[in-house]
Image (tube, rainbow, N blue to C red; front, side, top):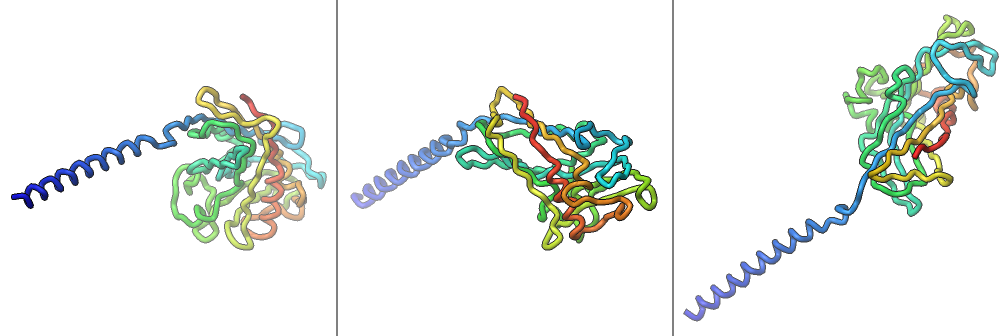
Length: 259
């Protein structure tokens, strides 16, 4: 009997210990430090220019080769947007793929949600689509093949399109489709802008806007200048595509931040 009593007492203690342990675990779960994080949003806003002039379709411009040209399509991807605080903390947007289309005004300004509150001094983004998504098969949203920005499974996404008309081109039109996602042909470009003069302040009660100006002229008339009389079509990855991608990366400037 004494042995049975001892066994019963031990079992009771074990049950109490188990109950206490479970209770402690549940308390730990509610003490997630992330519970104290608050979130806000900001808007990524793009304004296209041609040099110092406003940019519009079917308007005649002149390049550095004294050639007249007018654009009928300017489209490109902005992806992998990240923000960084002064202490080195980095926040990255999830599913960060945005198709910019000069002909669709709503695409020129998009809101980015669920950003932890705080002061951010640096923003980075990719012009193009990262290698992983280039080989991930059929996708939706901005990456849908229905957007006509995809070549094929082995050539991947078209990162940027510049199309239009010019009497200097052999057939009166120009068309540059820029891509190349891996190895020697990789044409993605990543831009970083510092915001030391005016930090991006994220809070639940405000929705700031980061206003970028993008000088479309630099795509074909930047560091690597293109004469449309000599080259008016490019639809494949390679060194020429990389040159245009690099040109276009230099078209972006952070103009100001609206609080």
